[in-house]
Image (tube, rainbow, N blue to C red; front, side):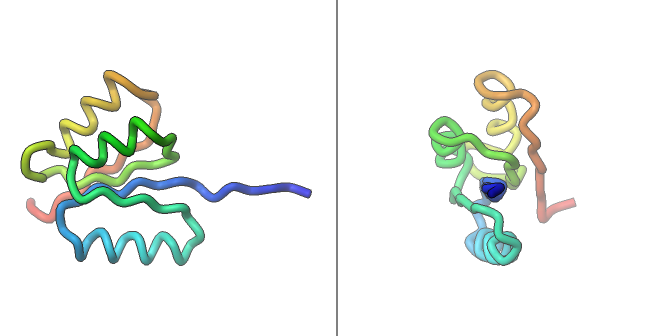
Length: 89
């Protein structure tokens, strides 16, 4: 029997409503979801887990989405899919 593991996705955003919305939508599609309230916590989770996809807000205080991206490029699999999001133009 084939055992399919759902893709593991990390969502990083400093807006609780965005975290809640995205995690609810993706959980309904049977993805395994982790969330981080800021870039610093996101980097900690990235160091502890292997993700199939990372969704990150670009503009966050202290550690931005660009900082998260730079950390991944320097320390993890540079082929990890990352989607940057922003509520600003």
